[in-house]
Image 1 (cartoon, one colour):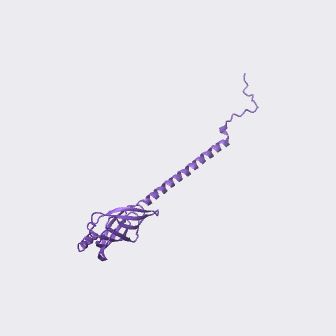
Image 2: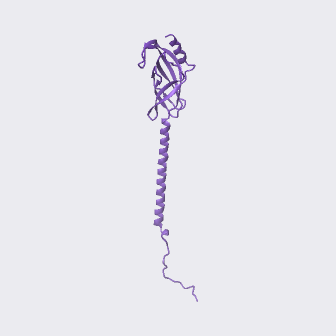
Image 3: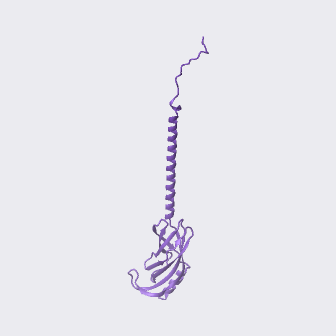
Length: 194
């Protein structure tokens, strides 16, 4: 027979396990929080670095469009001068206005324009700062060319020295179409009189 009323007043051994202990739980929670914070910091750094890289890439892109505007003859329109070590020949000095449009995503400064064809020399005046996407500016280009050179062979390759927003100077080439422009009208007409 078993007496159910009989109580054993001796202390029972504790059967608690280690994970009921609050100290290791606290350490585990702190460890997880630390891992989370480190992950957030690393992720934020990576996102910031990528955004900075994309901005630098965007600021270094150059895209422009150029086309001739008005033109006029220089003060001494017919000369006999030697260009690039060539023989003396009749030359035309012409001042042309060149419209430049920024088609890129960041502002640029057009520092210089040069003609990339033998028998021609150019100098440009001004350094317009062009806003991004549609910003326009005008350059004055002094051209000195030999009449014997096929000046208006289409297109006329121009070299642009451009400073980007990241302060780097880049050189790009752009072929300018002269058909129908004052540049095309004035130069050949005056070469015929040379």
